[in-house]
Image: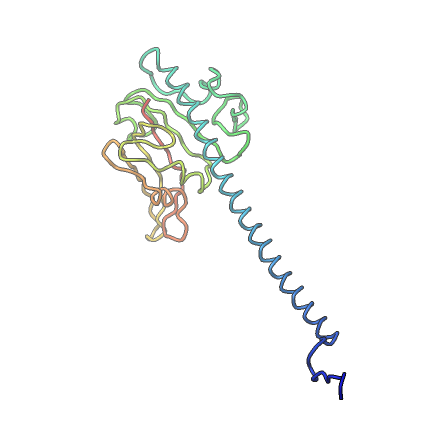
Length: 234
């Protein structure tokens, strides 16, 4: 028959239901892809924000330490220190801005310095003359020392602040002479307490992995029960 062609069954236009199913499948694929990308962006953003916050807290801690060091050098410039001076002297001399002054026991005396931006950026400070200090390990150094007790520092910031090279260089100073931490060993019966001291003056160092252990020993029998302390010669 001329003029007529028979179209085979199953060829040509798709059934409307098949078209709808195909469109639905594409839509679901696009939705899953969109959700996956969105979750990736959110997680990446949270990680970036946390890292940026940790870096900013570390730099805030360093800025506070540098202000204290400047005050210590200025106070000691007139001659040898006799005994030790504390935060209240630095505060009275306006070496540390009032926004950082912290009176923990509300007795009218500044007893620590706390960042106005981060509550856990807090330090206790002692400035002592040669052969003086609150601990025998500091007194034996026979040098003017500035001692930082990292009172409420969080683990992430602590692990950034604590590392020290064998040459005594670290974020809190270029002449760090001693780092100490008190450890509780739950693996002994009864649990034992020990003081660990690292002396860059003797060629010792604190690596980043060491710092992670001293700042927060999770998953082991050791627990840092006192905040790390850092003594800097000035």
